[in-house]
Length: 503
Image (cartoon, rainbow, N blue to C red):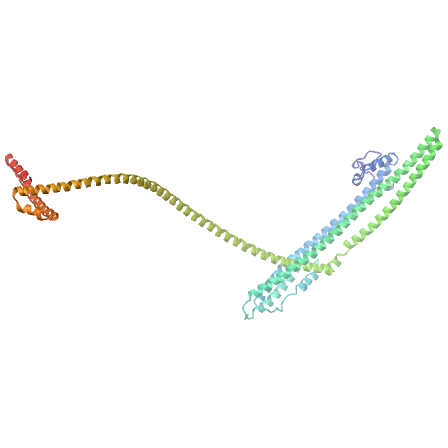
């Protein structure tokens, strides 16, 4: 071959001499077919030819892969740079656009429910933004344009602020308007997100189709290489068989029969080779068709100029939608941060309240436990007192029984004694009357005869009292006598006299 590569490194092929190099796709084929191909190609003559052909095919494939890789890397770098520029512009736009919206909403909230004449057309504003795009200009110049625009709007709003506001602010209506606008913007965001996802799915489907076509092309190329290898091996095999036939004809006596068989085999091989050539042509036609389809897809996806894409209405509308959605997302993010701060504050208050409740509950439980302990102590004390009272009651009951018995006995004794006293009193009275009669004391006798028992008792008591008084006087005199020193005889006389008086 004229297109052989000089000084190729055959060590990477790792194939023994006289056999075909196996690629990754050939390894995935059936093992039996590979063994048949290796059996057909066993001659030394076509080895160099086959190896050179395979090397050339691999080289062409590698070069095509390298070219595609370089193109994709270059395109990726361009897209990344463009994306970074657009992101920077969106950041600047979003920052000042949010400021404008905040100022306008602040002033419009102080005016009546009329639409302000200074409302900004967001779509026109964003169109001007993207029409003024120039890659050569710096971002500082781009930012100055919007700073001037912001200052103009702020100055006009300051003029409006100078007017007197007659009516008070209706917060409920403003809240309702904001909620309606928020709902509309959220619905629009959902629709735009759905459209964006649909476009992404279409792009991913097209990329998958391109990858499938590339895989089919590589499979067809491998099949084509196999078919070419089989045709070359078949040619060399027929030549060797011809030489073998001549040798066998000269040595063997049955040459005619072998020639007929060989002719039949040659016819069969020729038919097979013609069929394979037709299959190869069909595969080449299919490859050309697929290449044309791939080129058309590449023209549709890659060969479109960037300026045409940028100037397209769909691209502009998507950019406008992206800018609007980004500003809405930033406002939602600010609202979310505000709500999170409020949530954290409420959470802290709730935690403090829960701690306070837990502390109060703990103190209440502690007081209740102390009260329960006191009640238990009082309960044990009352229980012990109850037991002691029960024992005392039982002892008292037993004592009462004995006392009842004793009282009964005492009552019996007292009754007997009383009866005895009555008898004795009657006997005493009888004896006194006898004494009175014996003494001849009529008064005493009359007293016993006429007086009642009570009168007799009163007279006797009076006599007893008189005798007690006399006894006391005598005892005083006796004491006075004891204090005076006297002879023993006199003392004996005094004592005798005292006893006589007592008697």
